[in-house]
Image (cartoon, rainbow, N blue to C red; front, side):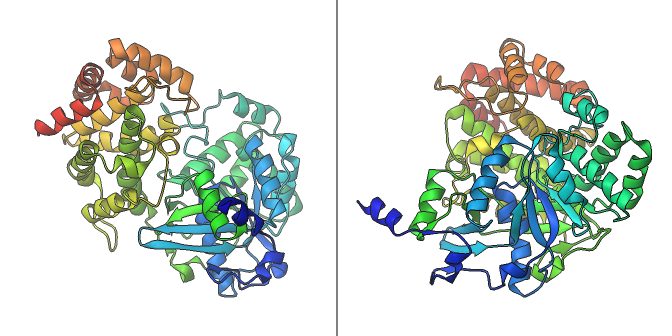
Length: 499
């Protein structure tokens, strides 16, 4: 009965509802009818709306950046349904901040349109080609850049890349669409736009440049050279824990009295560090506490090596033993002790200090954020696409440790937990559903590695030069063998007792 009463009194999220008196929710102070586009953002997931869109919203709340409104875009089937939902609520989003001490909410409105999703991406190309667009930003996940893990170059053998090289005017990929739009802009004399990656990748701007220029070069070398010289690709570091939206999040927004089909919850922490390299202008982000820095690498290294790698330590363990959320993992004594050891003894030695933050202090900050019981960030979300995340977040530290003869045993155990998780069956016998673009391949490798642990390193092709290290091979093989023989908890206990 109580649930029925709540739903009966819900107000549909829309421009009209902004006239309602929501005493407990902050609303846009700006006139949304006067906003004009400046950014196309590709990949309208929760993270973008809780992070990049929020920063634009903060500027608009000050009466600024009104000509930097966001046009959403995407190329996946997911985007068709997402566009329908966002269109029905005038592209507004309810953000709910989950602080251990309480909860707050706000409605943000910097997004004003969402490009229709069509085969060949003609609508997206046309929108990016218009002269008002000065930034094209994207969140397409760490594994979405078509980079060959073994060479760090564009994977030209991927079917979608092959298609875009042969049919550049009807591309399948985001990058092909960006290239096609830049080609039109060049022909019309509109000039370039800034290409801004907002994904968790070290040197994300550099990687985006490589992907775009390499792909363009397969069909139009002259255009590729123009993109390389005229477009800018700022590196950036983004940080905010944003869970996926499920029944719990939908219930939270209903309790606020709002009918929002795609609300977003997030932690009480945000950080954005950007290289100030924008060929066609940018919003004044520094006014809303965005750090503009010429050395983004220091910030991103700290975040990726400590926070993102730490996520993988917890999530792989959680999947193996059947825990659902990251905060549940942080209640397990064994994995927390292991997490702290690996962070302080095997990761921190390879992380440089950034202005205002030492690596050891950052470990404490991250641990507190992970333990936030209000944030129900699922183990499954964090473990998704482990092939890309381990390669990007964990392997760089392993390489640094091997090159300096530092400890790697805990990092090897971290990799062994990933291999065990990819077996696809938890220790209680339940099935781990496919959770990686390479899941079938990884599962088959993991099954062989149960009998011959070293085969995981030799067959997966994700390790590159790490696979040549006798020390790493020995440590990994020993740890994976122990997990299979004694279980992951006992293996971690034994590891810690030997320290």
